[in-house]
Length: 230
Image (spheres, helix red, strand yellow):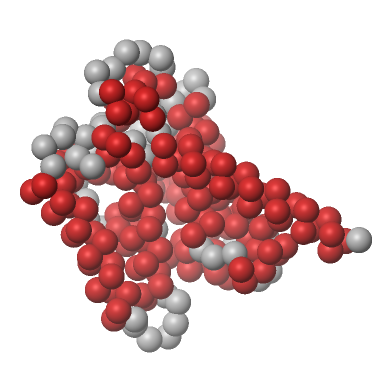
């Protein structure tokens, strides 16, 4: 939660690398490393508040399911299933957390950037959790640049920089909107009246769409898995 949390755009990339190992073996193999990483990260984000430890563990399990779901689906759908599937599952789980009664207590990935609201003016139309999508996509590209092969992919590094800087510059210099913050999102999903018409009508469009895509992927994996057994 530093005032310039730029490292969040690379901090999740190692988890994508771990998922690369897990997908070719038992669907749940190596995921305990991801679980431990997420628990540690969320515990730090809570400023080591031990009263939150149960919620932190529960949320960490949910996030780890995004990687476990990818490993499971990969067993059925094979190489056609890209790493972007993890992002779909992660966003789906954030949408699920938003719909649960404890929504105000959960930590969303977008919260990492809440001290930089001027970077996020573009969220008025896409929703607050579109920031989570932005962070995850940049981390995926960072993974492709540094972890996918034995050599560094400089094209992907340039692409990573563009994906980080582009939305920030666009937000700072081309938009006058205030954007959506965490409090506005929580208020909307508690049924409170808010004054931002676009957001009131659309809600968390990105995560809601990801939920439908994730459901389709899971159904395809289940059907394919059942077909293989026959």
